[in-house]
Length: 171
Image (cartoon, rainbow, N blue to C red; front, side, top):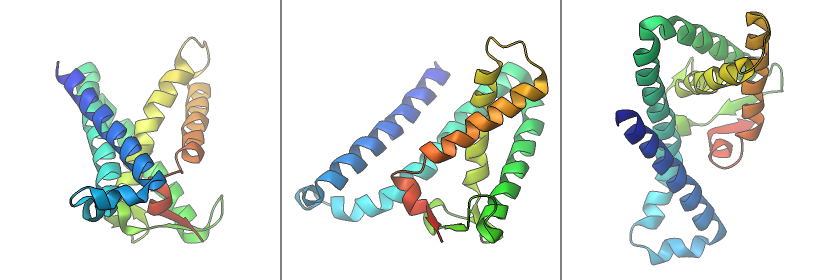
């Protein structure tokens, strides 16, 4: 029941984000017709992405702890540090896709460059990517890791519309 409530909450945030941003982006004049909407709408670009990452991580952490105990923590730290290094390379010297920077929309940043939530969001895609890469394949562990990594990285290209444009800027 707890897992279902968490997933339902996550879907609720996702649906509210997509519907709210879609409707008010297409018809911004509606903001004037709803009390306080004009004040709330800009704050939503900070609240909903942060809430979605934190809630998704919380749900996944509870699920993983129930399934494997604390064994998931070391892989989480490894993915977090690897992704932080990758993001720092991108935001400081532009490797490998050219220079970009994160805005303040996602909150506190490591070394003034990478929001604390970004490496966490990598883990949220890395684990399902690894699971998809492993499903039905008789491949080596390293092959599954490589396939999972490339699946996860493709999310970065697909995840840029909407709020991510407000969270990162290509220089």
